[in-house]
Length: 230
Image (cartoon, rainbow, N blue to C red; front, side, top):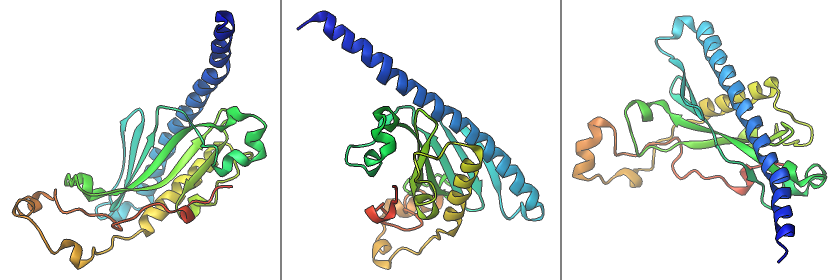
């Protein structure tokens, strides 16, 4: 094997692929920072609108760390997390068939910001068996273009990868759609057969709200029909 040829290939990969990934990471982190600001301002605005009801409807913005923030509104908790790594869409993904990606494969590398919905009480009472739901994922590339896969409006509002950029007006719409979905996504009573048995240990722990699993809809999973990206 020609050592100089191998070295040239490595240098070329570093100058293209690796540099591109750092650009994607920077874009994603910048977007996440702006999401934090929007969430903080959003929480303040809601508090102002609901001044007379704040004792009944808690509103709280919390920054856990560099890559994770929370917005608690009434009984719902939205958790926004940014992954520190960069990913590429699988070759079979519909995005990879678009002219936008085919014009430059480097555009298919994306950073990811995920939005999860939990019950606020799950964290308040440390109910470690409770489950949350992935509401949506934001994918951001080297040009600050993005798409969203997710539930309800999030699954079809933002699927134009070639023309959508991470402008604040778009981020606001994503946050509002995620919160609307979370509020409308109701807590359902689990089937009787699913909860009719309880162990002594679980019974002893009920007062600390740990063992009996609670979620808005038990058995929820993404299905192919739930995601609409073109």
